Structure formats: structure tokens, C-alpha cells
Picture 1 (cartoon, rainbow, N blue to C red):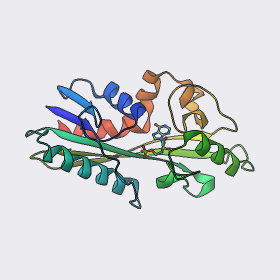
Picture 2 (spheres, protein in one colour; picture 1 turned 30 degrees about the vertical axis):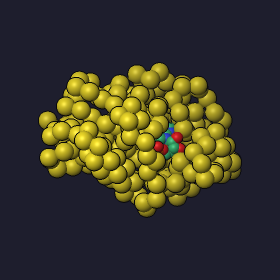
Picture 3 (cartoon, rainbow, N blue to C red; picture 1 turned 120 degrees about the vertical axis):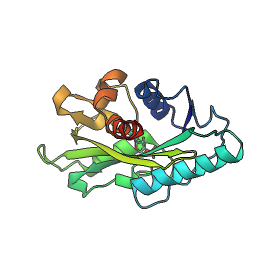
Picture 4 (cartoon, rainbow, N blue to C red; picture 1 turned 30 degrees about the horizontal axis):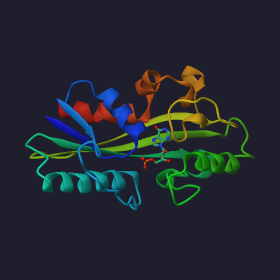
Length: 201
Ligand code: IMP
């Protein structure tokens, strides 16, 4: 069985591939599968965006004859929800600072918005909405979360996006200070994927 990951984000694709194990014989990123499209993520919820990505990528792959019975498309939409900012940037996480996907600018804006928030009130969580759209079968949907807090400066070189600002207390480091293996054991994406894979059994 083949799985196409509905994303052009190489970090996200690498993480999902590393966590999947051998449930699918072939796992391809969107571009690797020959699918050139940029889905407009304009839904009002993470779940809505994940569904939109899964549907649009599935429709294109199917129209190109890439999907056989049992093959699937996996989409994930992720947001960082900060308590002191009433859940912002949330579904707008990718375009928080600018209209493009500028991770460094997003982190800078988040640090600025949090400049007067004291320690103890800097709680936040990542949420990943995931949709597995299968050919010839029902969709599977799940949301995974991980709870932590926002640091006052960046720390760590690994990961991507908001990882250098996300402190994970049980490991006493930011997500960007973790190895890929460590992040993939505890992350929002891992929690979402575990639920999806459990529903597949
Ligand atoms: P999307 O799910 O690709 O739309 O990502 C939304 C925003 O969240 C982008 O700014 C990403 O860089 C960021 N993001 C997504 N996943 C992660 C993650 O695992 N860690 C940190 N930031 C992330």
C-alpha cells in the first residue's frame, strides 16, 4: 500500500516518515509523488485545513491514476496555541508575522507579543489535526496535542517552526534542543499519528 503525505514541508515529511514504521510499503512526500500543488490553507480550523489538504491532494493523485484501492493520503495541519494570547497564533501559525511562511519572523513576533508575560503564565500547546483519506474506505481523523511553555529566547538548532521557543518540561529542553528521535516520541504530531494508526488496525 502506498501513502502520500500531503505536504511540501520537508521537516514535516521527514518526521512523519520516521514515525510511520512499516505500516505502508511506499511513503512519498507530495512532490516526490509528482504532485505540484500548493493548497490554500484558508479554513477556520486546523481540522478544516487538514481535511482540505487531504481532499485536494487526494483528488489530484487520483485523477493522475496514482492511487489504488487501500492507498491513502495523509494531511496534517498544526498550530501553536498560546494561553496568554488567547490561543493565538493557532490556525494562523504559518502566517503569523507575514503572508509568507517565514518561521524566523513568526518566532520574533511571538517573542515580542510575549515580552510582558511573566514566567508561570507562558503556557502553550501544539495541536496537530490529521486526516488519513483512503481510496475505497472511510477517512480517519484525529487531533494530537503536546503541552509546554514559551521561552523568553530561542534555544536549539533542531526541528523547525516554533520549536526553538517551545519548552517541554518533562525533558527540560526546547523541542529544538531535542534529537529528532526525542521529538518524535512526545510531539503533537506523534500523538495524532498514533491515534490515526490505532484506528487503522
Ligand atoms: P502547517 O501545519 O505546515 O500549516 O504549519 C503551521 C505553522 O506551524 C508553520 O509556521 C510551521 O512552521 C509551524 N509548525 C508546524 N509543525 C511544527 C512543529 O512540529 N514544530 C514547530 N512548529 C511547527
